[in-house]
Length: 178
Image (tube, rainbow, N blue to C red; front, side, top):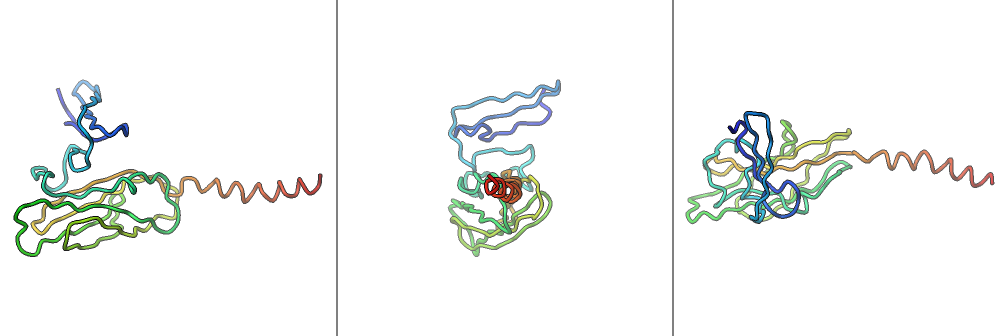
């Protein structure tokens, strides 16, 4: 008996869709498929935001592979690349796409776009060590919500620089004494 529904995404990075299923008995199954991965053809959570009945075949938003591959981000900001897709045959008057970037429940930035296409946003980063899920949310002129998300670390490898700042003077002093 299923309890958690199913989740479909490329979990192992092989370019194919994988399905994870949880059961009432406490078992978790991961099934590999032969279907090619495309961000708009995934089902990344049990609930698909504000409108689980909306088809992502016609419109949606996804983070580009370049931004999705970011692992450790340091500094004051990072550039997030994403693509707005709108293949509706009748868009109506004044279509727009409100993009909101979230880190957990914290809204980082928001921007309105009037056309679909590929865009970049400068997103602020936290100054402390943490891992987080970044969610790119798109709301269209009808209030339909679409999103994509990925995990990233902030300032995880700062200690490497700190290590050299501490060790380098000691090494230089030691070699000078020899």
